Image (cartoon, rainbow, N blue to C red):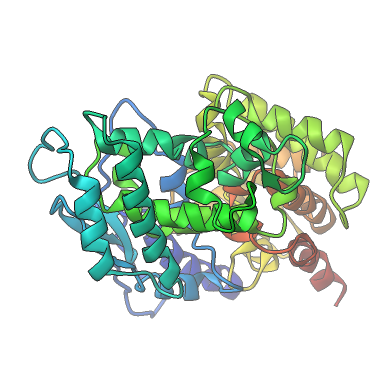
Length: 431
């Protein structure tokens, strides 16, 4: 029972950051109640929460940080002034831009010039001073490229292919891999032109070698994040997405597994594409059995996300798998397994999962748990043993290589490290 309460206490803190509308309650007998700030989401009743928003609540591209550390480090919000004077609120110490206090007017033609001027003197991004200078460079360059446009900000976003980068189901890395047909790890002028992004070369190619490397794309995307978060916009997704989230996603272009990220567009099913690629090639050092599990899991997610628009499927899959609960648990995956194994029988059931969720204040019910348990339950005894959980988590680790937006923090770690985390589930049983 102590293990369960330990998990609930740690998870309750995590849940407060995960769901802005949840108030922290007492997390165990005799413990003082914790409190956390909350912020209301500005959501369209006709739309689901965006993939970027999901990761703003669950991921912080931390460097080996556990959940508690990640929550605490979110206070380091880049100081980027917004030209529209839109009110800001903190969600778990993350920058959250709410809808404008007053309706946004027709965008004037000098906003990019204003942004350049403001950012040159009033911009600070922790650990990345180049992001501000890149944002200024982009503002100046885009001013010249959009001078004939009535709506320079919207045209600038189009020239920068902003939506194609940040709304790709596999993240910016997915869009990079779609364009990089020759798999040279850089983008040529012809590859950019084929995707209607011919003007990107002059915005990205810093060393003037007529190629856009992954590192150059990362600098470009970080600059875009700073610039476009300082501009007024009618784009609800961009308006609601924290700057830090965009910065973390920009980094995904150069993470270790970026070569393996599935090359997918907005209209194709990302899970089908991931399953197809994994069936043909298994990323090392994963075994074929783990890749087969990942293929099966991707196929399951195709069914569980049926009817969801392709560009929202990974978002939905992320909320179904909730992989951060496993891989970002303070004690690792074994911490969640032990909390689920409330009868200490070396296994857990759907009922155990539901019981644990009920003990966590404000935690949402996951209707996909029965399907996930049935998938992982290979011997069909209606429970998940440590060995079965290990096989399942290894499959999840492999699938993350293809679709990092399922859990960006975990995907940013090398595959061997994530596989080792999964292995801890069974090692405890043998200790």
